[in-house]
Length: 203
Image (cartoon, rainbow, N blue to C red):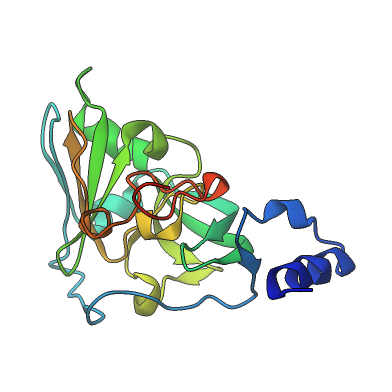
């Protein structure tokens, strides 16, 4: 029996439904740290989050502005393209759709490009970021999001592979046409659905 089969069997022995694991994934209780570049540090008095591109009006939020918006808490599974999954993770933040609503979306808006430090981007269809579980997340497991995991703010789009959830988020650029982000330019899939194993270009 291989590693992935043993992992699924161990879940079943713990009373956990192994069907929650997408194909090619294994379950872990850890939260591995993976990122490109150094972990940035911020002066929160100077921190800003910008929404622009194909919008009716550009929006710039301070940290206080963000925290004044409706806050939500969710519990969700997350899945990394490097094949680990973590069940029942707890997050809090602001729904992405609520922030987009501040900017106003024209009928031509169809995609977004998420921006994060240091110069990172990830592209997503607009439809993937307007659901209940798509967040600008500032809290993980009841505590402020750690810098290693993208704090003070990261995007969270948990139904897609985690590279689509941008650490150290700085803004959203609304697009009328799809434009590849950092990893998509380097051979990763345009969408990244774990249940379809959309890991790399051509999958």
